[in-house]
Length: 110
Length: 150
Image 1 (cartoon, each protein chain N blue to C red):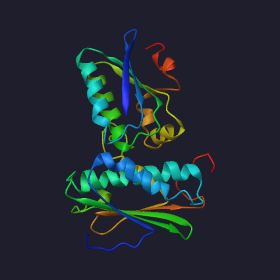
Image 2 (spheres, rainbow over the protein chains, first blue to last red):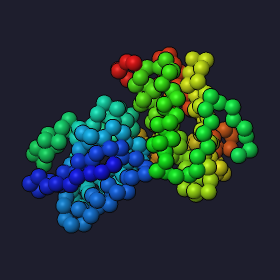
Image 3 (cartoon, helix red, strand yellow):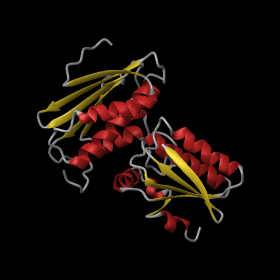
């Protein structure tokens, strides 16, 4: 798993490539927390190039969302494939996150 | 390991969370001949096995690299069955709260066992709680079914 970080206006866009799983979840978590500590408050994590997120990866997203909300910000997600959508729906995490079909939609009106 | 296993595939691997993907990929490669709906194999079975291995290594073996995890795969009789056993003291699976309840939805952990139960047709633990068996029926079963076909 690797991820690219860019800034679109005042939104921090993180594009993940590869699986987000127990063996690498801390890398993404630390990357987002570093940006949060720097004052960034609006985040979009895009999973257009991610085939799978395991329960540990889901847990990291939940944890990050909570920390960002505590600072007055928001974490949005985008581009989940059909399998990832299913996992979010089964765990009801689709009720916790704002999930857009594409990153442009997630960035819109943020 | 005190119990001998006699599956179509028996794999014993050391505790290393970075090896989970490779282990799952190897097991899945042995399942390609199974006549099961592709999405049920690639989503339901893969996710269930991944979560079982993660639990075994992280919680069962406490991430101790000197401890091993054994995977037994049995194919046939209309079902695919995987058993994952760790060297830990075991746990009570009924003690894990439902992560979808409003009071638990913001908790960062507790979704692995839930996903196993949702995605597999049968999930059961041994009495000690250090061995989980996952069953995916080759014909359409009660667990979640995707729309994609083989």
